[in-house]
Image (cartoon, rainbow, N blue to C red; front, side):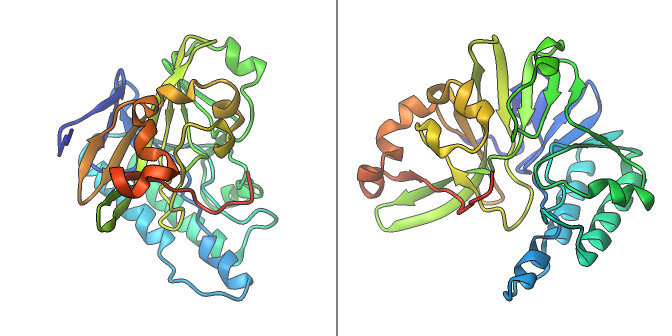
Length: 278
């Protein structure tokens, strides 16, 4: 089902902004996005490689396009704004300051929900003010990164929908001649034991190309997905400038087309980003 420019709600009051990898809460006048990974190019350079410095420009484009379509007073980053684990890189710092300063001018309030890559991020607050938290409650939504299990504090809070990143979900579409395209996607599902909904955001980072969407819990990075989510009921929502917004049925209904043995025959496969760090 192609939705084009129609606003699709992934949870009540939480909608996709056109084909962009983020969501908008009308109630809170806030954009929520995840996994920007500023500094990725610097890590590649430190390892002796080279890729174009595109991450910052891509993130700013996405933010600007979203702000041209909706009225927002705040932006919530659902973790992994930065990339380098063990340091705050020189270029990483400069680009983080540029991104956050620009966002601050546009919306006023910035909240960063700490991700597993966000070590040393508080140092950036010497140059631009923003809030850093382990989770962020904006009823009826609770925003986390997703790299840790849900703690007792989170479970005691009043929320109906968990919004998270960390997974970088994507799916590849194929035709009989081969791969047509690989697209980021949202994942919409349920946490049956809690009676709550869950929404996994795609990565904003241009180089964070996507983790495997599958029926196997072992292929997911987040302990929340592995331990709490009914994986078979996860529903992929593909986004892309070429396709707009494309809704898929639940994964259990896609068993044949995401099984490796039938990829080429039936037309849809899942792909996973090569990642050794969770």
